[in-house]
Amino acid sequence: ECLASSAVRSAHKVGAIAILCLAETGRTARLISKYRPSQPILCLCIPHADNTKINNPEAVARRCMSYRGVIPLTRDEMDGACEHMDYNIVQAKKLGLCKPGDRLICVHNVDDVAVMKIVDVA
Image (cartoon, rainbow, N blue to C red; front, side):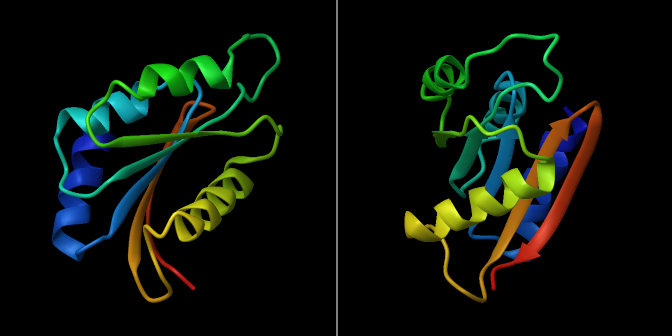
């Protein structure tokens, strides 16, 4: 919860164009949405990093569609968090959410490691 509130506050303070997040269950996107940021939330729904938990990224994306301001995407590849976030930034460019020089807030809570980054789009 503190990661989500920090992401929204940081987005406001640095003038970020969008908030990007990774979601295995959709919880991170839901918590960010709870704080009602003025920026869109681009949520990349991914499979669990370990194969012991079964999730369906499409089902997570459908659930995320009901959260305020969330634009869900899916990806089935089993990459690391950095590769997923790079893919999310590329998709944000394709959707016209950002352009080179814009700032983004990137958030993920994958493998029980909470990370927030402020990224300048190249």
